[in-house]
Amino acid sequence: MRFSMKIFKNNPSFNTLPNVLSHDWNAFVLSEGIFIMSIKDKSKVCECCKSVFFNVTLRGPKQWEKAKYCSLKCFGKVNGESRKGADETKHWKWKGDKVGYFGVHDWITKHYGQPIGCEVCGLSDPERKYHWANLSGDYKRDRSDFKRMCVSCHRKYDYAKVPKYWAKYHSCCIKCETTKTPHAASGMCDKCYNNRAYKNKTQKV
Image (cartoon, rainbow, N blue to C red; front, top):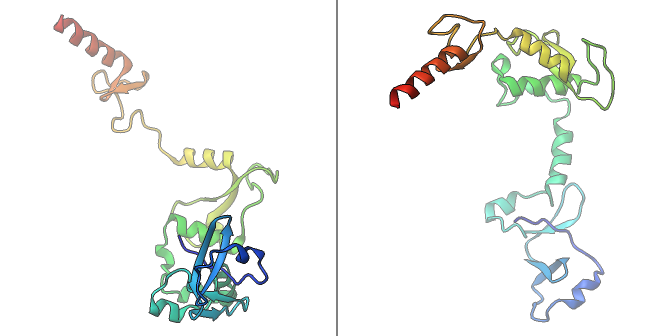
């Protein structure tokens, strides 16, 4: 487990620590009976919140030399501010039009926000959930290729695009070639499948 703790000044809990601690260590009380220690010499000042932090994460020499922030929260604040307004197409992981399903949905949400209504049925209940529905299935970085939909309309739209097959690998029954009777198993309808099972049972007897 990793910790990144700040100095606690005038903390009465320090008086209850064991006397075996030498002057070269600082102790941080997390809860009753649980504390961690770090070497005083390995301390830095956070560039974000300006608080002193220690190498309690047991980083290596090179990692500790590059450390600038006391926590991931401070790192996120500084890094997020520096990336505002940056050209995303110059990022080394930018894929352009080769982006996948999740990437293009992250892109549309980042630039146009989370949908708050349905453009199909007109639903605008804030307690309901809404999706960005892709229209063409090509997942392009184009606003006109997306539409705000509620979960119900999104499901109906996607199901309407899927071709309806009698079975996953068969267009009709392999025995009687019907599509009126529902598929059971092995490419056969209910009637043909039950007839085969009955014949196999009587032959064994």
